[in-house]
Amino acid sequence: MKNRILALTLLCAFLLSGCSMLERSYVASTPHVAFSDEDNDPSILRAETYQGLVSALLHLVGQGTETGVIRLYQFVSITGSAVTDVDRACLEVTQEDPLGAWAVDYIKYDVTQTSSYYQVDVKVAYTKTPEEISQILSVTGSSAVARELRELLPALPGQAVFRISHFSQADSADTLEQAVREAYADLEEPHPVLVDVEVTLYPDSGEQRVAEITMTWGEPVLPGAEIF
Image (cartoon, rainbow, N blue to C red):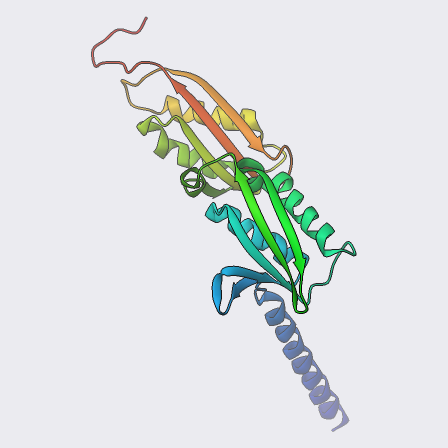
Protein backbone atom coordinates (compact mmCIF):
# COMPACT_ATOMS: atom_id res chain seq x y z
CA MET A 1 0.00 0.00 0.00
CA LYS A 2 2.83 2.37 0.93
CA ASN A 3 4.50 1.62 -2.41
CA ARG A 4 1.30 2.46 -4.29
CA ILE A 5 0.89 5.72 -2.41
CA LEU A 6 4.52 6.63 -3.14
CA ALA A 7 4.09 5.79 -6.83
CA LEU A 8 0.93 7.89 -7.05
CA THR A 9 2.68 10.76 -5.30
CA LEU A 10 5.61 10.63 -7.72
CA LEU A 11 3.26 10.42 -10.70
CA CYS A 12 1.31 13.47 -9.56
CA ALA A 13 4.52 15.36 -8.95
CA PHE A 14 5.73 14.46 -12.45
CA LEU A 15 2.47 15.51 -14.07
CA LEU A 16 2.41 18.78 -12.16
CA SER A 17 6.01 19.52 -13.09
CA GLY A 18 5.20 18.60 -16.69
CA CYS A 19 2.33 21.09 -16.74
CA SER A 20 4.66 23.71 -15.34
CA MET A 21 7.22 23.00 -18.08
CA LEU A 22 4.60 23.21 -20.77
CA GLU A 23 3.31 26.48 -19.39
CA ARG A 24 6.79 28.01 -19.33
CA SER A 25 7.40 26.82 -22.89
CA TYR A 26 4.17 28.44 -24.02
CA VAL A 27 5.03 31.75 -22.38
CA ALA A 28 8.52 31.72 -23.91
CA SER A 29 7.12 31.15 -27.40
CA THR A 30 4.58 33.98 -27.20
CA PRO A 31 5.73 36.76 -29.57
CA HIS A 32 6.38 40.18 -28.03
CA VAL A 33 5.02 43.19 -29.85
CA ALA A 34 7.86 45.72 -29.71
CA PHE A 35 5.84 48.62 -31.12
CA SER A 36 2.37 49.38 -32.43
CA ASP A 37 0.28 52.07 -34.10
CA GLU A 38 -1.59 54.71 -32.15
CA ASP A 39 -5.25 53.72 -31.90
CA ASN A 40 -6.54 57.01 -33.30
CA ASP A 41 -3.68 57.65 -35.77
CA PRO A 42 -1.92 54.76 -37.54
CA SER A 43 0.73 57.14 -38.86
CA ILE A 44 2.09 57.49 -35.32
CA LEU A 45 4.05 54.60 -33.79
CA ARG A 46 4.22 53.87 -30.08
CA ALA A 47 6.75 51.93 -28.01
CA GLU A 48 7.57 51.35 -24.35
CA THR A 49 11.11 49.97 -24.46
CA TYR A 50 14.43 50.78 -26.08
CA GLN A 51 14.11 47.73 -28.34
CA GLY A 52 10.63 48.88 -29.28
CA LEU A 53 12.11 52.25 -30.25
CA VAL A 54 14.72 50.55 -32.44
CA SER A 55 12.05 48.35 -34.04
CA ALA A 56 9.88 51.38 -34.78
CA LEU A 57 12.80 53.16 -36.46
CA LEU A 58 13.55 50.05 -38.52
CA HIS A 59 9.89 49.88 -39.53
CA LEU A 60 10.14 53.42 -40.91
CA VAL A 61 13.33 52.52 -42.77
CA GLY A 62 11.79 49.36 -44.20
CA GLN A 63 8.92 51.43 -45.57
CA GLY A 64 11.28 54.07 -46.98
CA THR A 65 9.52 56.69 -44.84
CA GLU A 66 11.27 60.06 -44.72
CA THR A 67 9.43 61.52 -41.71
CA GLY A 68 7.76 59.79 -38.78
CA VAL A 69 6.52 60.16 -35.23
CA ILE A 70 7.23 57.71 -32.41
CA ARG A 71 5.68 58.10 -28.95
CA LEU A 72 7.39 56.47 -25.97
CA TYR A 73 4.92 55.53 -23.24
CA GLN A 74 6.00 54.51 -19.72
CA PHE A 75 9.47 54.53 -21.16
CA VAL A 76 12.30 53.14 -19.04
CA SER A 77 15.60 54.58 -20.22
CA ILE A 78 18.66 52.36 -20.54
CA THR A 79 21.04 55.33 -20.47
CA GLY A 80 19.28 57.58 -17.97
CA SER A 81 17.96 59.95 -20.61
CA ALA A 82 15.31 59.47 -23.29
CA VAL A 83 17.21 61.82 -25.60
CA THR A 84 20.39 59.77 -25.21
CA ASP A 85 18.40 56.59 -25.85
CA VAL A 86 17.01 58.02 -29.09
CA ASP A 87 20.50 59.07 -30.19
CA ARG A 88 21.82 55.59 -29.42
CA ALA A 89 18.93 53.94 -31.25
CA CYS A 90 19.49 56.08 -34.35
CA LEU A 91 23.18 55.12 -34.38
CA GLU A 92 22.29 51.45 -33.98
CA VAL A 93 19.90 51.61 -36.92
CA THR A 94 22.29 53.45 -39.23
CA GLN A 95 25.52 51.66 -38.31
CA GLU A 96 24.73 48.20 -36.93
CA ASP A 97 21.51 47.08 -38.62
CA PRO A 98 22.17 45.70 -42.13
CA LEU A 99 19.23 47.46 -43.79
CA GLY A 100 19.97 50.78 -42.10
CA ALA A 101 23.70 50.57 -42.85
CA TRP A 102 22.89 49.96 -46.51
CA ALA A 103 19.98 52.33 -47.08
CA VAL A 104 20.26 55.22 -44.58
CA ASP A 105 22.61 58.19 -44.67
CA TYR A 106 21.55 59.71 -41.34
CA ILE A 107 18.57 60.22 -39.02
CA LYS A 108 17.67 63.57 -37.46
CA TYR A 109 15.39 63.66 -34.45
CA ASP A 110 13.66 65.95 -31.97
CA VAL A 111 12.42 64.72 -28.59
CA THR A 112 9.56 66.46 -26.78
CA GLN A 113 8.35 65.42 -23.34
CA THR A 114 4.66 65.58 -22.40
CA SER A 115 2.84 64.48 -19.27
CA SER A 116 2.03 61.09 -20.85
CA TYR A 117 4.88 60.27 -23.22
CA TYR A 118 8.01 61.34 -25.06
CA GLN A 119 7.34 62.28 -28.67
CA VAL A 120 10.16 61.59 -31.12
CA ASP A 121 9.91 63.35 -34.49
CA VAL A 122 12.37 61.81 -36.93
CA LYS A 123 13.60 62.66 -40.40
CA VAL A 124 15.42 59.95 -42.32
CA ALA A 125 17.86 60.73 -45.14
CA TYR A 126 18.39 57.78 -47.49
CA THR A 127 21.11 56.68 -49.86
CA LYS A 128 18.61 54.34 -51.57
CA THR A 129 15.19 54.95 -53.10
CA PRO A 130 11.99 53.37 -51.71
CA GLU A 131 11.86 51.21 -54.84
CA GLU A 132 15.39 49.91 -54.22
CA ILE A 133 14.53 49.15 -50.59
CA SER A 134 11.37 47.26 -51.62
CA GLN A 135 13.35 45.07 -54.05
CA ILE A 136 15.84 43.72 -51.52
CA LEU A 137 15.72 39.93 -51.25
CA SER A 138 15.77 38.34 -47.79
CA VAL A 139 17.47 34.94 -47.63
CA THR A 140 18.84 32.56 -45.01
CA GLY A 141 22.50 31.74 -45.57
CA SER A 142 24.83 32.24 -48.53
CA SER A 143 23.66 29.00 -50.15
CA ALA A 144 20.27 30.63 -50.67
CA VAL A 145 22.05 33.52 -52.42
CA ALA A 146 23.61 31.05 -54.87
CA ARG A 147 20.18 29.58 -55.69
CA GLU A 148 18.66 33.01 -56.21
CA LEU A 149 21.53 34.06 -58.47
CA ARG A 150 20.90 31.08 -60.78
CA GLU A 151 17.36 32.40 -61.28
CA LEU A 152 18.36 36.06 -61.61
CA LEU A 153 21.37 35.93 -63.93
CA PRO A 154 19.54 34.89 -67.13
CA ALA A 155 17.93 38.37 -67.03
CA LEU A 156 21.44 39.93 -66.89
CA PRO A 157 20.74 42.25 -63.93
CA GLY A 158 23.09 45.10 -63.21
CA GLN A 159 22.61 44.66 -59.49
CA ALA A 160 21.15 42.28 -56.91
CA VAL A 161 20.78 43.07 -53.21
CA PHE A 162 20.30 40.42 -50.53
CA ARG A 163 19.58 40.68 -46.83
CA ILE A 164 21.33 37.59 -45.47
CA SER A 165 20.67 36.08 -42.06
CA HIS A 166 23.09 33.50 -40.60
CA PHE A 167 26.09 35.00 -42.37
CA SER A 168 28.78 32.57 -41.20
CA GLN A 169 32.49 33.07 -40.61
CA ALA A 170 33.16 31.12 -43.80
CA ASP A 171 31.15 33.64 -45.82
CA SER A 172 32.70 36.75 -47.32
CA ALA A 173 32.53 39.10 -50.30
CA ASP A 174 34.84 36.66 -52.11
CA THR A 175 32.55 33.66 -51.57
CA LEU A 176 29.57 35.66 -52.84
CA GLU A 177 31.54 36.76 -55.91
CA GLN A 178 32.38 33.11 -56.54
CA ALA A 179 28.67 32.27 -56.31
CA VAL A 180 27.98 34.84 -59.02
CA ARG A 181 30.64 33.41 -61.30
CA GLU A 182 29.40 29.86 -60.78
CA ALA A 183 25.85 30.94 -61.63
CA TYR A 184 27.23 32.72 -64.70
CA ALA A 185 29.00 29.53 -65.79
CA ASP A 186 25.63 27.77 -65.76
CA LEU A 187 24.08 30.23 -68.24
CA GLU A 188 23.13 28.85 -71.61
CA GLU A 189 25.05 30.07 -74.64
CA PRO A 190 25.17 32.63 -76.08
CA HIS A 191 25.41 35.24 -73.36
CA PRO A 192 27.34 38.46 -72.79
CA VAL A 193 30.70 38.41 -71.07
CA LEU A 194 30.59 39.05 -67.34
CA VAL A 195 33.16 41.83 -67.21
CA ASP A 196 33.24 42.48 -63.46
CA VAL A 197 31.59 41.57 -60.16
CA GLU A 198 31.70 43.85 -57.12
CA VAL A 199 30.33 42.79 -53.72
CA THR A 200 29.86 45.24 -50.85
CA LEU A 201 28.70 44.09 -47.41
CA TYR A 202 26.75 46.17 -44.89
CA PRO A 203 27.81 46.41 -42.10
CA ASP A 204 31.43 45.23 -42.06
CA SER A 205 30.76 42.47 -39.50
CA GLY A 206 27.93 40.52 -37.95
CA GLU A 207 25.75 37.46 -38.48
CA GLN A 208 23.27 39.48 -40.54
CA ARG A 209 24.42 41.43 -43.58
CA VAL A 210 23.15 43.17 -46.66
CA ALA A 211 25.13 42.15 -49.72
CA GLU A 212 25.03 44.56 -52.65
CA ILE A 213 26.23 42.73 -55.77
CA THR A 214 26.98 44.82 -58.85
CA MET A 215 27.57 43.09 -62.19
CA THR A 216 29.06 44.67 -65.29
CA TRP A 217 28.18 43.00 -68.58
CA GLY A 218 29.82 43.19 -72.00
CA GLU A 219 28.00 43.54 -75.29
CA PRO A 220 25.44 40.80 -76.08
CA VAL A 221 26.83 37.99 -78.18
CA LEU A 222 24.75 37.25 -81.28
CA PRO A 223 24.04 33.63 -82.18
CA GLY A 224 26.79 32.28 -84.44
CA ALA A 225 29.16 35.14 -83.68
CA GLU A 226 32.74 34.33 -82.74
CA ILE A 227 34.15 35.58 -79.43
CA PHE A 228 37.68 36.94 -79.68
